[in-house]
Length: 197
Image (cartoon, rainbow, N blue to C red; front, top):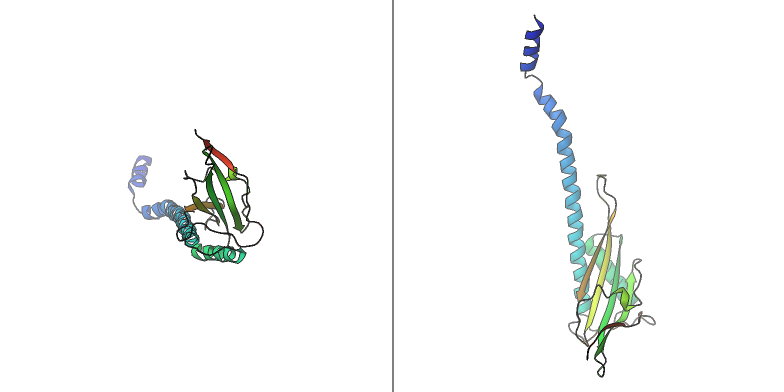
């Protein structure tokens, strides 16, 4: 058989094409499925972390009694239960806006700040100024911040990631959220917000 005819026969043969296609497509398909699962798990963790943070903030905003160390530990445990995570931290900071009646100068103050799980507590209003929305004089806000560590299920080139969430609430049923845990709600220096007329 001439070389020309052998080449045409080899070129036109279709036996074994499914095996070759499978060898090429199955690894790509497995990779796509793994990337999809890791991405879905990351967004699921983010969503759960957001909802758990807002739940703890809502709980604190409805509190009419004082908050102490036991309450903070319980809030941290609640966050861990809702987020289905043991590798997390929670920080609660209460700030208020004061206004000097004579000079109309507004000052942002930290009333108290407490954390469970390793986050540093705030002791200066400068540390929270970028987290706080515009406040009216006399307003008090509760900032609940959470950090939840996430590890991908498959090694896709992604490392561990810390999801950081913040929820800001105003006290609902009481004029303020009081720290009753003994010395130390961190009461930091005020931050001059504006000076008008």
